Amino acid sequence: MKLKAILLKLMHPYEVAERLLRALSPAIKNDELYLKMRYFLCTHQKLHLDSPLTFSEKIQWLKLYNRNPEFTKMVDKFEAKEFIKELNIPNLKIIPTLGVWNKFEDIDFEKLPNQFVLKCTHDSGGLVICKDKSTFNLKTARKKINHSLQRNYYQWTREWPYKDVIPRIIAELYMEEPDNPELKDYKFFCFNGMAKYCQVIADRHSDETIDFYDRDWKHQSFIGLRPTAHHALKAHEAPVKYDQMLNIADTLAKRICSPFVRIDLYNINETIYFGEITFFPFGGHGTFKPQKWNNILGDLISIPNNG
Image (cartoon, rainbow, N blue to C red; front, side):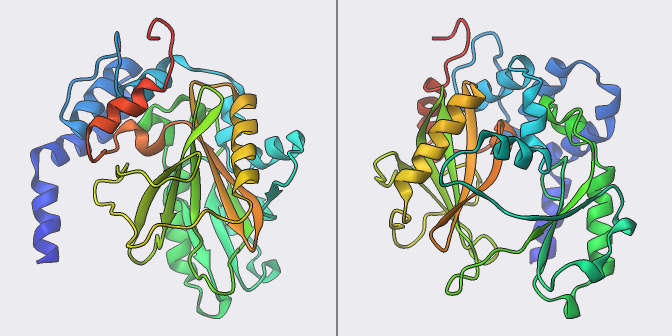
């Protein structure tokens, strides 16, 4: 049944068209045209760039017109750490980098600890976790990392900050908590310099749940942005030092100075760590349930000539 579902999805007209668009993306130089085509294939709706209203539409607008050269450093998974380090934000730690390389073959695995994480600096998804070097599948890791290194993330997404990010590999220290094998992601949705909502993603590798909380840690009824997402069975308690996390998100959002930015943090053993900076979550193609939240969050993004 699972194979049948996959085949049916692959044969869906929108899926076929999206794969064709991906193949043709190098030849399509007009970013606005490209974004309109991809938006339609992903959402089945027309993209209104002249008067964007929803969160999804405004994210597309920001891809085209919110261009700050500093953003390239902020989305580079290696350079972003240097950016954060220079800001010297109180109570914010940075996960140690164990090495950075241009090619997989340059990695000296003998020098890495027993547990580590490999990431590609220029895209989303190029991630390999090693929890035990004795069982680490080097062949599978090489295939995944090399595939990511060859991918032109900007060309496929037209997310401008990634255009000039140098494709590299970094290794980070593997982080965990004694009683929690899967870390929670705390993703702060910041609008015009202030965190308004915190998206909590839990059990990512088992039965992923996604919940939103407002600044006062009141659980929100909506679900987003992944179409298959569902709420946790029990509401999460506010993390220890939540006020510090909120202050860090506000501080970074004010420094970045963008109508919208998502600040990702971890709270590991009551220590706050920087995760990443994201300008276009889910590429602006995410799903909201109820759908009205696409408009509610959209109203919070102030762009020129649009409030």
